[in-house]
Image (cartoon, rainbow, N blue to C red; front, top):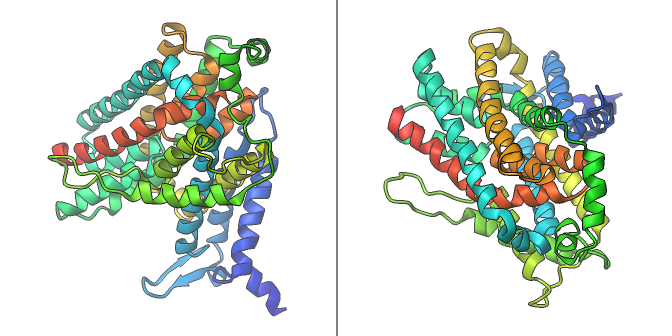
Length: 414
């Protein structure tokens, strides 16, 4: 019966594949269940991952042992780190391919307004964080960790940790606070999208009917049918050449005066930008960018499932323990505030005052928090690709600002 043990023990390849397959299959299945007419879709993979990891940690004999650190894990953390980043790359690259052909037209018609609204969300999040800091007395490093988790921005967390470590401090506390706020950060972002839909009584089906009628015009056809160029046979070359170029672009450091750490687009921002450019200009320069719509969709869904499974499996090891002991529950609550306040205020203004299309608004809210699960939910709930356009329009600037503000909070207030 040794083969059963190999499947159950955390150091075997079979165990890792078994865990990922179970988490993703169960998460996708549960995500189809609607509560009050609303389902969380792929996001359920995150919560299944947390549950599986938490309960798996209760059986020490089945855990992977990190001999260097003397710590046990449900799944090898290095494997989780790789799969998480690779899944995120696949997801954002697929999104870029989808929106690329219509991206610049969409940016011309409303890109400036969307980016200004996204900037307002970022700045309001920073202000909310500072207000909580001064009222509660919680140290800035912890608050920056909570902020990064509340808006699900890992690059910002990394930049803040580097800045704090460069000042001679232990940056581990930022990661702990981030892990506490992250899961409900995902839920909070999606909840804000749903809340705006309920508050303003948005009829998604009616909006889609109007969209179908409007799609007959040439301009909206280019927007809503952003992936219409992908009707030929699948081509793997543009996928992996684009990912290669995206990783290189995302790794290029940009030095800004007064900031001790260079700013990068990262492993998510780089591939997204390259995919948008390839989708927009690939045909003009005769670069093979034709990929079937089904292939792009499969790439996107596989990527987000891998990413969410890893986040859940990582967080699940200490999630419950931290919540029930110490200040974990408080950090979770503060994270929810930081998530919801900026999104609900700016999102409501965007829809009611600035008349931003609801489908575009869904993507803008997801992009302003650089949150792939929220985009995945938005596309599924909308039933069209317009949320991806809103997401991609604001993502590059938002990512830059999230990284910058996280570092500045540490450097100026820690």
